[in-house]
Amino acid sequence: MSEQSSDRVQFDFSDCRVLVTGGSSGIGHGIASAFAAAKADVLITGRRAKASEYDVDLSAFRYQQLEMTDSKGITALADGLDGLDILVNNAADCSRGTIEDTSLELWERIMSLNLRAPYILMQEAVNLVMKEKRSGAI
Image (cartoon, rainbow, N blue to C red):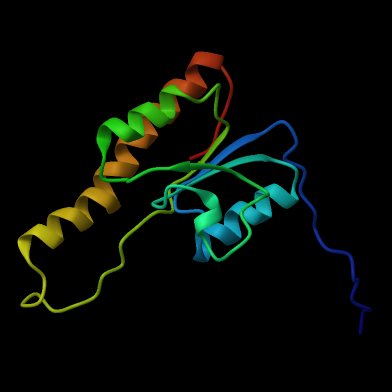
């Protein structure tokens, strides 16, 4: 049997600008933390006005309040970025319920958050990457 190495794979994302939507909790926070640990410049979004309003330490990231169903807010966020290398569309609504319990208004909000918002942000991200003639990842 071979001896297992205790070495772990490490990544270096120095000089990479990363945007993680919904990075204030859960999977998004884990993704943002991994990029920050790999030396990336990480911007996260969340619904609260300030990063300090969350129970978790978000000091490793830049923070931007953003309601992902607000198309103008998404565009304003993108317009305020100097550039972007990596976009992680993490913000989502995973509401569960029966068809009888889901109103049309709730369904439309879920579709806006889970499908429309990432599409708009991907268009903006492509424009940011192409403006710099760099490669990127979404």
